[in-house]
Length: 388
Ligand SMILES: *Cc1c(COP(=O)(O)O)cnc(C)c1O
Image (cartoon, rainbow, N blue to C red):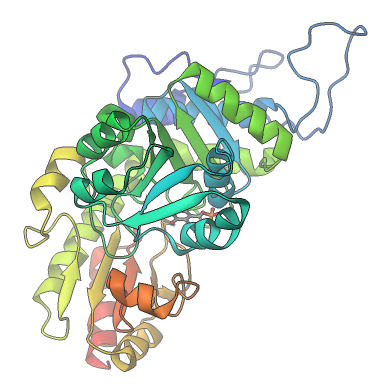
């Protein structure tokens, strides 16, 4: 766990580059070195050492933790081996008999962890549509310890009013955890709206180059951070120093990359919305989005994530197999554009009836709009839709 002392007064694009980092003291190296070591030599037996074993702490990892904590405006960051490991690291603060209220339309792997792993261990879940804070309130029980939401959701781009749901969670004596993977701290900082825990799959936008699996938790509360650090060192899902360094390299360009993703995402969403071959376009930045006002209240930009309804699985298949620049692949948030059919890919592990309930039809196509030239992206979508 690394504490962040220098959130400071700098703005986000400056923090992305400088937060949590200072020149290496021996050589003045401007980049934090990759401390590729498992252990640290101790100068005396039983002395008070800052570093003793790399599962517990590693300076490269700590630089990344301070950096992302700085971007989220949080006091502490903890890095994990993956986004799911980060979520699991928070869930392991709970005990058998505790209850969680979760958004129903989360990342498929989160849903699978809750339903097929953690529920076996005696943690109970109620799934709700967190667009409606009253649904969250109605699901709260005396033993509810945590409310978990994603906003925008994957892949339906539905929003949760963070301030309203934080209030509901706190009234019920629970904490609010927000998966901020889709929005990134450039576009949305949940701690500012009362969230207690922010989680990320750094695999996505934060790293941004499709070459690392990683996760991050950011919190403000010192005791909560210490509890999380205890669980992490006791269970072990830490990232290696090389991966931590790669993500840190990625976050330096987060502000400029997100500006480009936001611009391309908005332009592609507008274009798709006007295309006769598209039945519906889901993007919070469009005035047609049912929660457009909320989007403008709690977000500064709307990312490169867009989903469209093509009406049938057959059309969706033809579309995603015909794009050339948009690569058919899982994942999102890299500089390159990706395309996929959630029902058969990211959400394949979600039961068909639950998928239908969530609006994830066989004809729904999700795009992760990259930062290539917009005209090339639109030409690619045009030719692929013509063939679909
Ligand atoms: C990818 C993703 C995860 C899981 O992260 P991994 O790094 O793949 O373990 C969690 N939440 C969201 C929103 C994601 O997109």
